Length: 248
Image (cartoon, rainbow, N blue to C red; front, side, top):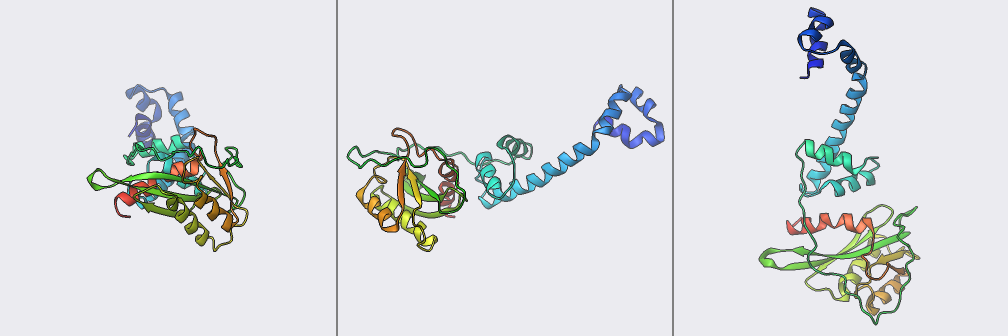
């Protein structure tokens, strides 16, 4: 309890002037504090409600999501919030995610691959589902110092995971299987979807190009030497990596 709160609770019995004198407070300061009490109460209530949502997302992730991924999940659910506020509340309530770093190179360009234009031009937003998908590959550490590779397909509009594939290799079928899973998720209705990726050899392969052509999907690749550049894939990877590592 703060000194101002003490004065507010006991002013009826002892008076504001006497309490402020005893506690070495200014009466003007107390009345300013009292005037702003409704706004503080509203902020505290909003923080409490947001903290409950943060705890729910954190629990559903197996207590692995950090502030970045939780913020993305909240925004996807329609909550207007910034990452700094999520970080503050997580810190105040000792809510912690698990940090994992990418240590293995998963983007290896094929210099002989056919050139593919950048149709998104780093604009990773969409007005509707099935306008644009993004694909990426990461690794999953497993027991014995080994790891698996995970390919994902995410809808830019909803940030929903549409398809994924996991294997102990990075051959073209890793990404084609993920693409096929995404097409099945959408019931095959994927004409003119843009599929954006980095310049990894898997995405530049003939097998992947053929799979996109059969589905009516247009390919797009970011600038050479950069990642796919999309927040959707990057923010997503914290979850499956940890979920798969724990068998979820």
